[in-house]
Length: 183
Image 1: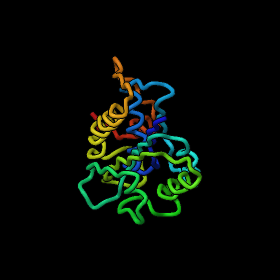
Image 2 (image 1 turned 90 degrees about the vertical axis):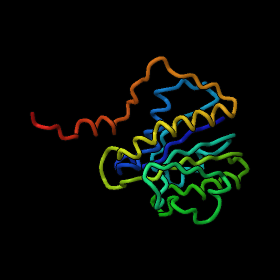
Image 3 (image 1 turned 60 degrees about the horizontal axis):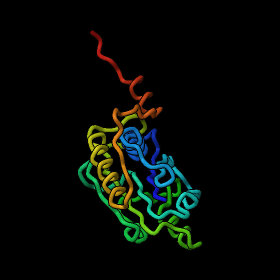
């Protein structure tokens, strides 16, 4: 089984990148049931390890807080994630402990053999709904990279005839709350 997980807090502007990318992937492509699972994990805590069990490959989509150009993509492997103090990776007790979750899953002998972390540098992590233009532009290349990674692992990824709506509630909220110019 291959899983693509979006991680984030959708109420912190660009931190919404992971789930937004997962939704776009789901809206644009048909993936084979039973071979690939897409999920928005939100801001998991200690339960993250349970989502890693018995997977062949795991792809995380999330932000990576680096002093780099907003919207730039950085790819980390499982080996990178297992190093202590990965620069830019979530570190506080209120955020997902990715390294700890991987170590826990591996400790019980059921961790993923392969992990990729596709991290995009955020421009804004303040309270609010909606992505910055730089991070919004990064979604399509990350979706394409995710598709390429799936196809490289033998997964048949089929483009949808027409893009479905993502159905993301945070996008609806953002659209309703945007100030419209007065005519």
